[in-house]
Amino acid sequence: MKQEKGFTLIELLGVIGLIVIPSVTNLIKDSKQKIYDSQVIMIEKTAKSWAAANLDKLPEKNGTCLALEQLIQGDYDATIVKYNLKGEY
Image (cartoon, rainbow, N blue to C red):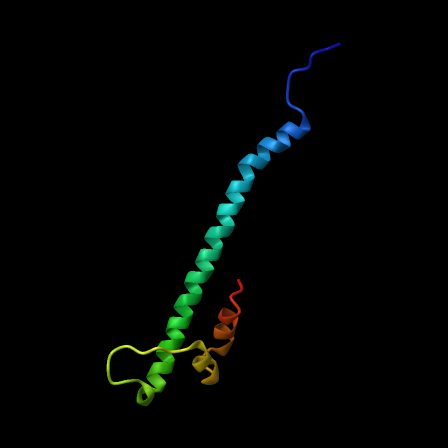
């Protein structure tokens, strides 16, 4: 019986999987974080637009809480806001 040196296909696939899977996982995680960051920026810009158009509704003191539903009702970038309310990417 001959003794062959080398790896079997299963062994090679296992090694490749050990290298590739963490890389792909990190890539997905990083891309989701970038999408989240851009959505936060879009919501902030939308809230600023709402505040500029509704100065009379803002409190005199610093700080206010603006619900995303208010942006939708005011039709401020409603598609962006609705997309973010679902929490989807």
